[in-house]
Length: 355
Image (tube, rainbow, N blue to C red):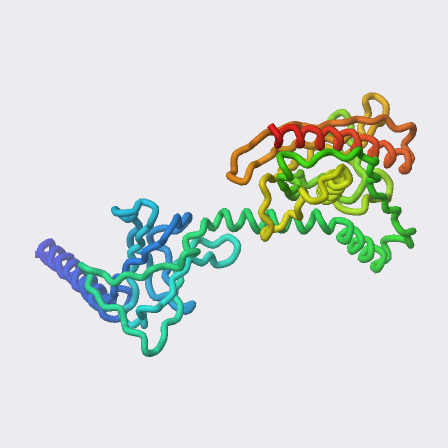
């Protein structure tokens, strides 16, 4: 009898747990996360990198649902279709805007619904034939590319303003008593050699000199030295008149203008269309030991036509010894080295574009 009673109690307990589970599901369905939802399809015109199934859907900043499915448009593989399920009470109108947002710096992409006029019609549809929302054309922008662009812009700003940043830190050091009064830094500029005038290439073809690319260490105004093992240090307190990539760009433009290309060299801005672009990558702008001290300048150039194909490419390199390590002697050697590479660049560009 005792064994039978024990089994009876176990059976009653099990039945109670099952009934409680059904009750919880019933409550959840009517009052919790399983309440009735409306299904929509969101059409994107391009890639939506990083968006995943289960990602939140926000309406004016309030979470109303999530992404339930992702797929490609069977009629157009360049388009992406996202299926979302959101609370039925969300006021989704025919003019509701759709975008992709990334909360914070390390968040994952989410779908954001915004706005809709009061008198705009409510989207109608069924689960078998969901209403369709068309995302903004820029909503599918690759968020990783956007992050890379932001970092590149920040990197360029830091490089272009390295001299100002040095002054800020020096001022802070002096303010807290960690530094002493300093003399103003000596500023040097590259002096261009007078070049012989040359005919404009390919019947007055126009070209621009794009902003040079360079490693972070070269994006400075300081005079640099590079040892045989590749270590780069700053020499003294003197500095150039601009960051090395900007200085190189400006002096290349001036060299072309002085050589008779004044009407051919156009400013590197978006509103100006040129026949060719010169893409410059700065590789070296430092004092080296070979074994004697010398000014070393090296950069590569690619000529890109208006239709995007590369016409030609070449590396330009010059090393000029300096008589001593005093700053005026170093600057004079850099002036001579740049004069050599600038002359080679002008001659090569003329020949390459004309051929």
